[in-house]
Length: 533
Image (cartoon, rainbow, N blue to C red):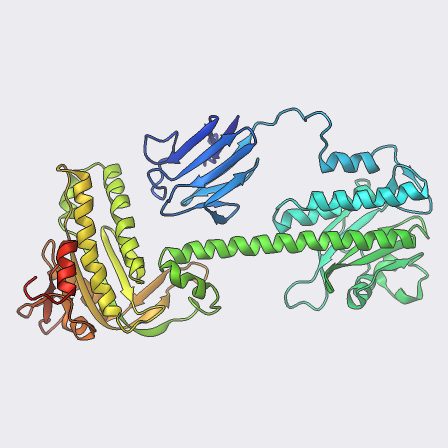
């Protein structure tokens, strides 16, 4: 039976949610097959389909998305051990293991069959092979490399791939010690990432000859030393002499034509242990290792980009996220911008929340905010932040438009109409009203705080005034400042000038205008310029 597993903290056992055959809906609503009480989940977030040929997850139009292995997906097949994230809730997919099917063997089992206990060891080669005949050896080496490719092809983090590479070499070759070295950004030569030795020997991170490693890395070609102690190429090497290294060989780890590291093996007791055949095999193994390392690095990069994209989608409309992802310095600098700021607040929310249970308040906001945020994004605004029951959005960053003020006001009016639809859906028992304020002017905009923690913010008096304009608005009103009115590019909005309004923090009263909001059919008349509509 498959399960969703939610890791617990403080030593408590993990929560396991069994999945029945067929469809299993997952979300925070109690009508789901799997109920997960987390505010980042939609009411009906996703469906997990358990079928005879496998299990898959389908996102059901959730607000905060569904992720598998760090990548946002609409639909994806699942396998045992996959990390699954619904909204911001991390989960794990597990399947009960069943006995292996007849005739089935894993790559690890295949490798064991090729090099397992009792394998013949040819004195002319260090490769552990079953079947000493030349034709059998060639075929077995190809099978080993194919099997290694299969083993290393599973998607794993780089930190998991590197030890696996080294452990495989210890299984396949007659070696005492193995070192995997990789070049790091800014380094002139590779540095040791994983070192291993036979269990009977003490491990050391400095047993390998740096002279040999440097030679292979710089030339991009493999090297065999029959007896490093008398090899003139490494005369004076303290590592060779001090480690009593006899036979050694090293091969480049190459991604295409680019050398990204070195594989080093040695034998401390037998000279002339490694042949040209062994070196060729080690070079081929290094190519497989390079592919696995590059794939792991690419997967990590894609996961990082997915996390960054998910973070950007919290603030920006999808249409601008792509260009922002390609901007290396976006978020790393603060810039000046001329913007229109929208500040919206739920009228009487404090009194309302005192009458509701905390869970009911959260459920209310989780239904209200996604609707409002979608409106902001449809009008290509930036969702700057939520403040309790308030919402702040900005037009003009990261992409300015000549009609940003028009877009902001259109969004405000659409918010009022959308709230009417929400109220109708809730029925008589619950009704919300909002008041909205708009102001335009200069701000400083960018990532405020740590570069690692993306928190975009707009700072300046313009944002403060927009909040004051919102405070001045009555329930159901949309007010705009004179600065915003001057930036409107069309006359399609029905505006009513108000007497100057004194607001906190401003010495002079503000000139404000009330924007008429209307039902959709009335709005079409307004946009046609019908007087008195």
